[in-house]
Length: 481
Image 1 (spheres, rainbow, N blue to C red):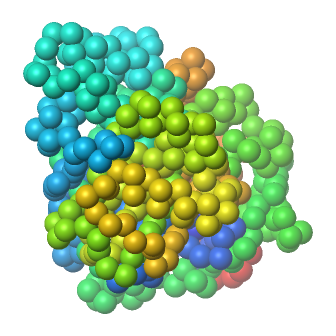
Image 2 (cartoon, one colour):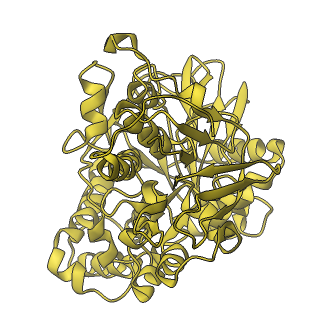
């Protein structure tokens, strides 16, 4: 028999599922992609002197990470220091010595090493860090650093981890939920040299010349600009799944693997599925968290900063912050830092999170550039900041095909006791056959928010079908759905 398999979404999870199925002999595949490209939240574009990763950028660790293992065998990656020249600068231009900021940052980072305490903690991660900070401050662990600077560095630490965990506030984030995430990231950042993160998709599809393999022709199976509006998985065990798109087209399938982001599921799950999803599934969709993180990219004709400078973290003086909040530039408060990407010497990238990121996405481009130029001139007083040559920004929330950047575990997740495993659970028909399956980083129990989590989830759902049919003869032929 030749099962018809439909994959919704051509991001990392969808590509991983499709390539695994193809290599296992399944040919009756169709991928429906709402965008006009593959990759999903991996989006590498030509920009400046090299490429720009609008989404996923760094490989999370070289330990227990198959993304790293797949790329490293072809010498595609390089490791850079995480904090090299990682200055924190105040809004009056004063630079905080590295030994001061590192001492505060290291203590706060290490306070989550007490697993027993963290697991029993009943408040948010923001509360947890605040208590650790206050205890260290009162006990003199920050040496002779003045209290104002300590609070400013703590505020930067809070913003950094708000960005890292993709939440609007650390006071929304679950403290014990942090233990669900396996984070082997250390002091190093692992980048893709001159290729960009899309290279992992080429590896999956065997498109690299270094692989010396026959490419997997996913283009033959992929239909772009197809936004799914309904998945009717019915109740008749002999009736296949009916998938309808917003343009009126429809597809029949024996199995559907849905890989859209949690943000999309949150927005449309009540109308996307017929019949409506069981309570366990809706509880997971509503309880798990997805946040907004965006990049704002400024390209200059030449660096106005010295060679080796890697960027800076933002520390607002209170009076400057109070004044900012009274202007139409108040959204700048949620910019965490600026950094110079590897192999892009003329570019500065700013990180922004939460509600202010969502505000930024909708502002006219000239207003965003004006705001960024203002903040650079205010903080970098020792440099002459020119006007940028070009500008690029991401819009992960306002794009209806994503509605967010990546997922985390919130206080609400704890209250509703929802797990990634609940989201990953397939919908079965009366014969116990999985007819609608769920993949994507949000469905991975320990590597959520990462590319390796997305790929691993795609492999998981593909293997589920491979195992289902492994004792059945597959007639290897290709026919479109």
